Length: 365
Image 1 (cartoon, one colour):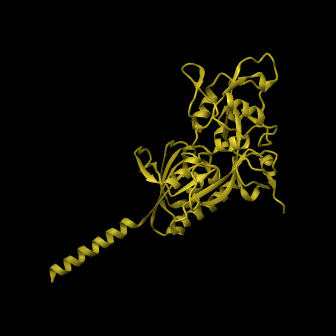
Image 2 (spheres, one colour):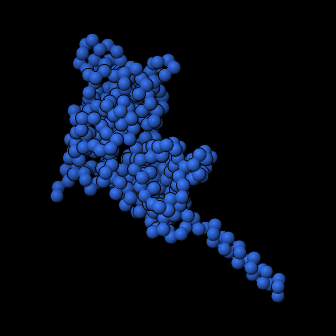
Image 3 (cartoon, helix red, strand yellow):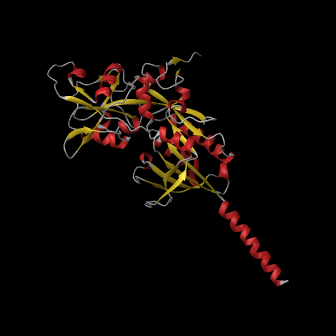
């Protein structure tokens, strides 16, 4: 009899332990770099006072980090269960590829600040700044796409580029991308400007690169360079750079160069002073681009066309819990975008398009 009771107690303990082990939700996200600041604030807001801890690549500025892991509780969604969220902002195209190919992504394994250990896990949802159809990673059925915002892409010049370079046209960009470098006078109209101006580009995983190449109908194999701080010279770059590398190179390069970034990085190139126009206008009306607030009227009404929608993608087989999390995240993002310096909620934008580089049409009331 005692043996039977002991067996029952042990069995009950095993069941409780198993239930305890399952009392955790884990969501893994990857994708667009440009949206990491809003993503950080939105996810943190979902936890609210129930946030346990956050581990980020850049502890002093987690909103700009490439990898972040949160843990805590989100009672209004999942009751008392622990919810752990891993993020790796590895690029908009890369995020779509992660979902389509079920690739493992490298995340910070622990939410404990300072823990640098990594873990490889498949992504559950991905941020994108391009439509799935604009990438090489299509699928049947296609990924489920939820559009939630609009983000402009800026051309930004290096600190070594003269003040007379204030704009780049579609035709100039196509010529620059085809050659990798062109005489500075091509951009200034001054015959005395005999130096070269170089082109720095994002890597192929970046949605920003898709946006600018579709917008300006760049075809073939673009040529680009990167700044060598050791040689104090530009050298050929066969692959392209990530956004942090481009930001740092534009701040370091003492010779003329142009690249492209979204606001979260462009504002940190010479304090936001080096953003130039595209085909005439800039994307904002304020005199200097700000990390706090910007007047993006040219994007809202269609005078500035170099922008992309922000998307969240999930597989068509996504679990009910994942859909619950996605929907809550979309709501938190929309709240954040109402005051974002760098992106707009769709509700504020008065134009629409069906593809990157597609015709921008006014929304008729």
